[in-house]
Length: 298
Length: 252
Image (cartoon, rainbow over all chains, first blue to last red; front, side, top):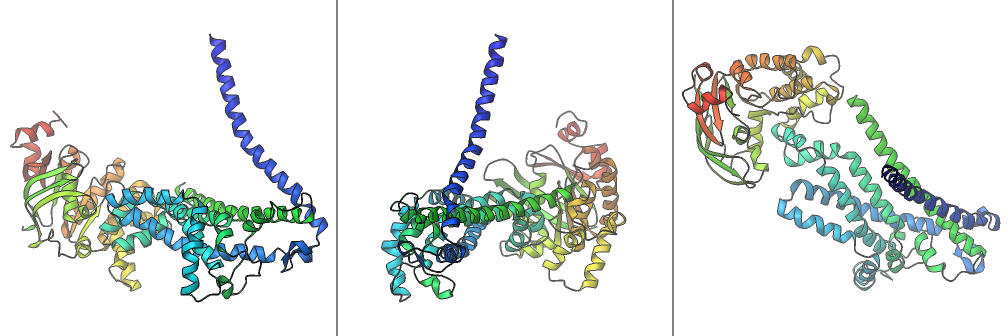
């Protein structure tokens, strides 16, 4: 009986352990695969033509700069929309809204987060882009700006949900302390509640940006997919092509093992590195904030 | 001695039905320590929170009655709540230093009130920290984060923060519940100084503290004011049976 118990205990522990390790193994394998397929690019295409501004794989032009700038401009636009709206909504839900309103809004925002991105892309093509084309008097409504608006919409629920949790975790006593000193509701939010929730709010921003930069389907549908270098302000209102959309659109048609195939994987690596950098910045900011708090408390 | 505050048949009920007040009427003397005591859930904190309208931010189902401070009904929706909270300061059970330095904690309320002159602010910092008996311990590190102080120091800092605003009434909700006996002694000693200038209303964290500090004492039980009398009389010869039972430790 006793042996039987220890055996079960042993088995369950090992199973959980295996599940834990497998997560690491899978990530490592994916990364290894990405490297194996992407790194040959460096041997087949020389650096200067990779950094060229022309992406035309059929004729051997593999300049990935337009794709990188395309991704960055769309993401930046999305962040500019998602961060103020997201934090504003989080503050409203957690600090200002009456309880019945909060109970409606919170699930609603989370529902919005679960909306399939292809549905949003659909709305973008049929509703948003024709409207923008007429309203802004553009040759086409499929622009970086359209993508930014929709990506912003996709990132907002992420930002709201994480930032709202962070604000909610600030002890009520902080707020009452400030109110009792004669602070208005806005002064309390700005000087006390938001600073106290700072690290959580930063995490929310970074997660939102991460969500935006990795998004594929929506941007592929609404940004027009023209690989043009996007460095001017006016590029915001012309078609661009992002890294994710390029991979998604071309991977299905490329000859296995060709240079084009390798370059697409190389783009995947670049994307991977960019989101890695965003994540590292996010966690180091949060980590530093935590360290500082620990130092103060000790 | 005159009444600083007059409460007239005040009733209140929270939406979740937890704590309530039923028909409270009492006068609170100027320049004295008035102690509100009784078992938990009796309405003491609720009454304190009515006095600076902190209850505005909680879900209240129904309330009626009046609270007059210097003859003005502060439950009137038209009144300037921010000005009221500057006039009626509050110290909480758990010290809540704001996420700033010691000095900033003290001057925060003043800055909100529009005071910008550095000399005035410095004076206020020194005066209020001295009155709350914590000046000697923090004077060399005013720019350190307030959260680095010990619990007792934090609580006296919170008291100083209230004093800096030069209120007329100071509300204290179990200000020593988390403190050691030495810090408690310091806060109680500060009370004696404070009542010379201010009207103090204290919810003590023990009957012993109530007996030590009370000029006047009010016994609350389940939302009702059972007995209200001079502190000495209350703790030696209570008139009501319930008060006597509570003071003697027969319930509560």
